[in-house]
Image (cartoon, rainbow, N blue to C red; front, side, top):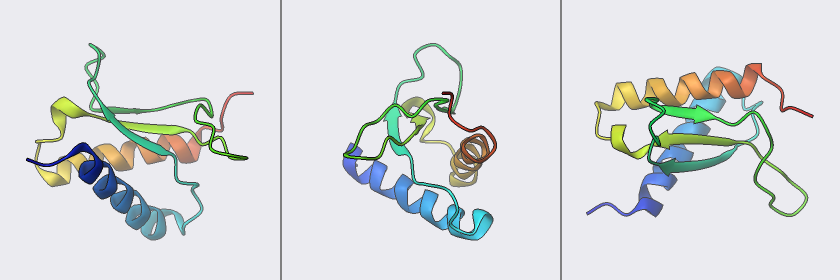
Length: 94
């Protein structure tokens, strides 16, 4: 059985690799979460606000929906890249 902490660690590694390759490491790593889609019908989402307070930082969030993590890895990677594009293209709301 794979623990949620191991899944999140893998998604953080995935984010870091994609950030370096596609964004020249310009993105600040968000809080990466895994939770049910809650009826949204989405594979994941990116928050529009800085919602996590960690000391002085308030990162945004990328969530990957738990129900869809068993898809083929290229599809999960596509979801991460899609959410990273939101992170890159949409500044947080003030």
